[in-house]
Amino acid sequence: MTFAATILTLYPEMFPGPLGISLAGRGLREGLWTLETVQIRDFATDKHRSVDDTPAGGGAGMVLRADVLASAIDSVARADRPLLAMTPRGRPLTQDRVRDLAAGPGAIVLCGRFEGFDERIFDARGIEQVSIGDYILSGGEMAALTMLDACIRLVPGVMGAASSGMDESFETGLLEYPQYTRPVEWEGRTIPEVLRSGDHARIEAWRRAMAETDTRLRRPDLWERHEGARVQSPSGAR
Ligand code: SAM
Image (tube, rainbow, N blue to C red; front, side, top):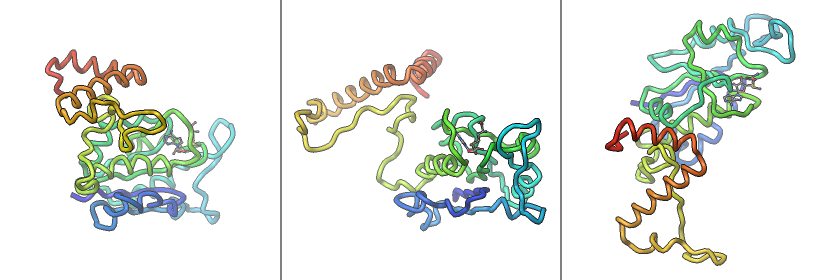
């Protein structure tokens, strides 16, 4: 199944952008995933081609109009693809959600600008609201590119033999262990002896211990969730 991405945006020229290079770019050229952009402004109905208006109740900035957004959304073939809107008010994106999306038929992604979307559009079109973190970007395009990058690298065939992806941070519920490469000694710092030992059981045990320690120290929130899951599933199975 091909992963089909449709982006609704005021700046279609921002795509594929960084997704046109490296593994994602090769995957795009090979048809492992497809990209379509829709210019929201094409669905404006007045002579000024307005897509936004002032916030109800007053305040700074402009808000994207629900009627224009709805026409843009309705112009796109849904074919069971989830409809997502990038917004800092959404549910934070996780590797679990990314994995689900990557395994599906693709996504239709709405990119906001200005003060964001008229709230009524979410319920009216059954849109899932997605945040990429607790900070404010100037538009949803960079957020959409980030989310798509995370999904596309998991689309079968995109990473090829480069990596299975299953060792990465978050895939096991933990941060990944630290990585090193040659030279063995650099600026007086040496690669840990265990990684040069050739003893695969020791290496695996060291990596596991480091992943646990780093997660506990750097991301107590993840560690707590991981420990909670372990209590519920004593075999350690996820
Ligand atoms: N007024 C909005 C608020 O305070 O929640 C912020 C609007 S922001 C300046 C403009 C657009 O950028 C948003 O509609 C959204 O599409 C995108 N955006 C900004 N930060 C984001 C984030 N952390 N995650 C996802 N999208 C984001």
